[in-house]
Image 1 (cartoon, rainbow, N blue to C red):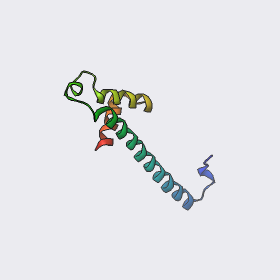
Image 2: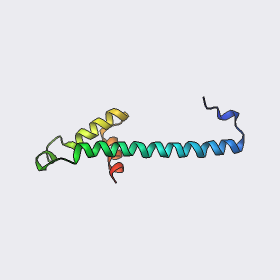
Image 3: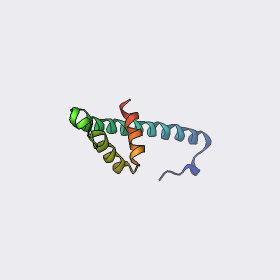
Image 4: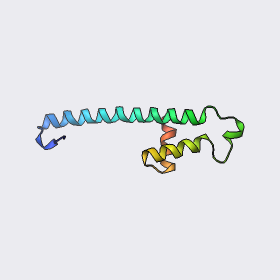
Length: 84
């Protein structure tokens, strides 16, 4: 287990830098997965399904919100970031 109390000042700064980098990498990976989910649900839509009440975007938002423990609105926000 990580114990920051056992680290010196310089080690704490190094640990913070390392954890921040790790977090950024994990976030980038998560957004790449979200973008792949959106692509699978939305890329092959035709005019009929794209304008349905529940379209690929809605299905993707539902899957992502369930997997991440987010509201549908928060999931849609992550989806917009991921495909940007």
